[in-house]
Amino acid sequence: MATTAFSVSLGVHTSAWCQRGGWFVNNAGWICGPENTVVVDTCATEVRSRALLAAARSSGYPGAPVVAALTHAHGDHVNGAGLVARGGGRVLATSAAAREIAAGPHTYPETFICCSGWGDITPPPAIETVAAPLSVSTGTVDVEVLPVPQTAHTAGDLVVWVASEGVLFTGDLLFHGMTPLALSGSVLGWLDALEWLEGFPAAHLVPGHGPVATPADNVTGTVADYLRWLLDAVADVDEPDFDALHRQACQRWPHWAEAERHTVNLRVAHAETHDYPLDFTGTLEAMTSAAGGAPIGLDL
Ligand SMILES: [Zn+2]
Image 1 (cartoon, helix red, strand yellow):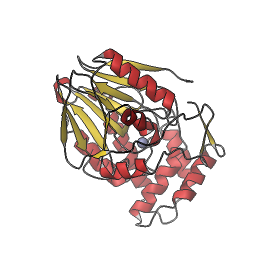
Image 2: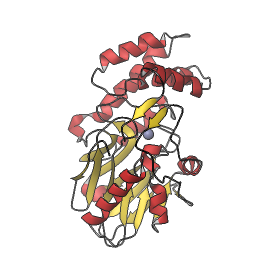
Image 3: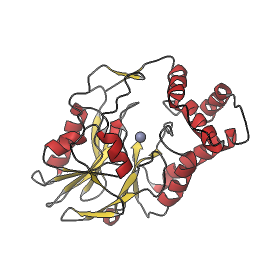
Image 4: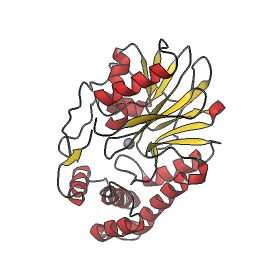
């Protein structure tokens, strides 16, 4: 593993599992109890996912059954779900995410190279779909698994809310200090979802990527400002100069890593505001070109 992973305690029973790095390096977490350990998301590779699951077991109740709640279908968050299932655990996701996970694993070999190897990332044989808010008791706290009401980061997002500890796992509705990615979702819907997110009285926000935040960090507001900028940049332009807009975005958010995502997000925003289907393959090619040429190496 090229980058470190570490846990951050956010309450008596709740921890975030934080990883630092670029593409496919995500945050996860868990809520422990004697009846269940709820794991929020897995990781991109078998090695990283095994480290997460071992940490979750060792920090609380080693014998408790594992319930994995997957915030969305992207491989960095779900590639370890098969490990959970084959270990006797349950896997939860929205129906849209479940369909995409079952068709995986998603590694996008034309766009990315993973030198370290993915390991066994076979999808889980079965996923329980979450169509409405679902409460899972760990035996100590109730964990709320809540589908996001609209297409946002993807068409099948969910969040995990631990009310008694004030912890909200947002999945990739929040990127903290790095460029968000709207390739599989809706910029307009994502803005609505952020407003919905503001309704949770959270003390701690665990973003899909980047450091754990508090409301004072205004991560939600920062992502919303960015999404509004995308829409403003393209909404009234028939044929945008995506290269020029990409450079503008890099200047506005100079410290955000994975800046090649700007060119994706601008294209998503333009397709959405002009009501035409996104050229997915062409958009990925533009992204890899913005990153300096395909394929992008993964530091896993
Ligand atoms: Zn994602």
